[in-house]
Amino acid sequence: MSFLFGSRSSKTFKPKKNIPEGSHQYELLKHAEATLGSGNLRQAVMLPEGEDLNEWIAVNTVDFFNQINMLYGTITEFCTETSCPVMSAGPRYEYHWADGTNIKKPIKCSAPKYIDYLMTWVQDQLDDETLFPSKIGVPFPKNFMSVAKTILKRLFRVYAHIYHQHFDSVMRLQEEAHLNTSFKHFIFFVQEFNLIDRRELAPLQELIEKLGSKDR
Image (cartoon, rainbow, N blue to C red):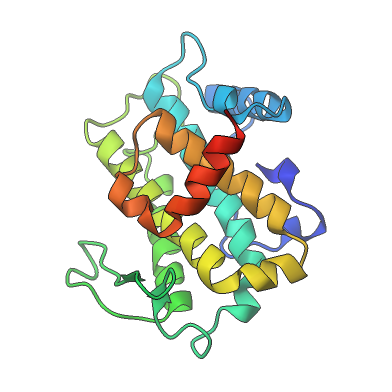
């Protein structure tokens, strides 16, 4: 959430996605911020009593997009075609881009290009009122959960790339506390609702176990 970030929070990779003030989703976001402030992340991710699961997942997905947008925005100058010619998360994991519509067959591309494709694609999903309705009473579509899972699976790859390829830059910028808190929040959230397949989380499995054990 934006309150996690210091002076660099104005520098985002893509425009920030805003939730309209006064809407029910805005109230949910405020609730999430308040519970996050308590420091208990396991509790903060739980579905608030009486709330709709789809709406809770939608609000948090928008928020994670904004967080990753800020985090990646702080290190874009270090993530270049030269430094990162492929989109990877360590030597064992490489990602090729396909969105199923514009690019049907997965293509190998540099990390900045991949992340640009990815964040633009996520933005398009979040802006689609038929997928992410912002008006009260408009139902979520039947495929909402599968779309949300794909978004979160892809956003995870940005965290994985930052941790594996750019953590030294994050430390030099003194942003590691922000990155760790954001990632811990993200992981606890996807674990709470089983939103990402365990195999997809493999590039950061050790870190995930460490974050989880600290919280028991």
